[in-house]
Length: 576
Image (cartoon, rainbow, N blue to C red; front, side, top):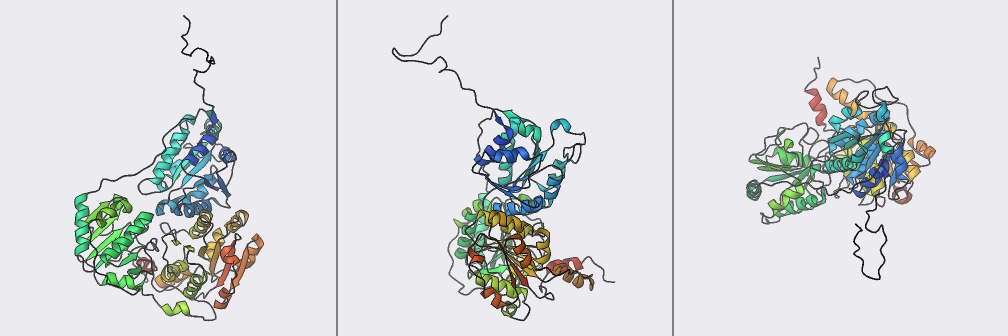
């Protein structure tokens, strides 16, 4: 039987016009890069290697991709964290074996801080699993996927080439849902190089919570009835909508606000309702207000761990009601008794509370933050005091500067003396507390926001750990300013030992001229010894693409007065 033609008289129909055109097969590595681009991932950090080479080759075919070659894989994760905190989901590429083991500290830091990052690790070919291949990380040798299980939200090995795109979509969705965090995909090189027909899938990712209207109603009534309440804001409230809602909430209730150290800046510190920081490096105003027994404490996005509570200070307990919002239900009541717990994202829960409130009379007209030893921030002694350094950095950098702080004694001074009014104005990796995290975060933040000044406040030992990423900044025109408080010693460690044990081994080292080191890399280097040296800094420090190192010579004998961690350690140490 002949086929029946449906063509109209006079028309021409090709014999193949009714045939389905077969899709073109593509290499898995290219499919993965295309899928990530579709999901908004265009920023890549990492160090190339053989096992991950197909992905690097595929990036050549992706004009939207921006690729940074780092000097160490942990720094790749720290930089990716800074990029992610500026709202741009990044991907980190590492090769098999040591490539991933080098990255684990950075993965753990991102996991502890709830920062979403996609990590793809190259792996040896499947046929070589269990044969002792060089740098093999399969479950038969190093079991790298097992290693990262406790520091990632999701981990998988892509074994089926046809499922690669679907696995990537699942990984990205997991990284961005609920309490955010890093994910890891292991990619055998033979899978990456295989060609398959790509499939079309949905890319929508969303997280929803069923909110208890009765509990929301009780929380609103409790807040309205409060006479001496406190709003405590943590980094879990970093969503832009939550930041706006918290300000509306505070001003409607005329209720003072304190932030945790990681939440610094999420409520403007120059706002008359701000009490500053409660926790490590915190302000006397926040401590006193809590010691004076507020009747209601409303904790928003706070894990209430050691750093955010001054080592679980028992005074952080209201005389009346403790209300807590957290996207992770396991955080509710973990460290303090909570009367009303609301599980959900802050920006999804707060509108229901705000809609039930009425504005209360305006009650405050002057800033409430009280600083420890404010005279230190104005002291121009021959050797600069760290508090004075922070004050001068703030004075000479624009209002929209993004500050990061590395881990060390300088972090306490930055938390205490910086006045931050922007929700993205202060970044610190305090979940894990890894030295070098603030250095990498600064580079990633500047890469994501090149039009804003970015200052990394760091110590001399932290810079010796990860300062070689300065060369990365020179290579890619990333104009970060590294403000190194150079006192020639591990001051926080040494001072802590002295406080706890009454003695300490010397923790000093050979003097380093970081300005000369910067110039050797092609960066701009300046030695700062006095306040007048800050005043001499030129516009290239704030505006250029050339990275800058400020080698700031500080007093090695100064330590921050209020350190809850040392007190906590003292509780476990015998001084016999």
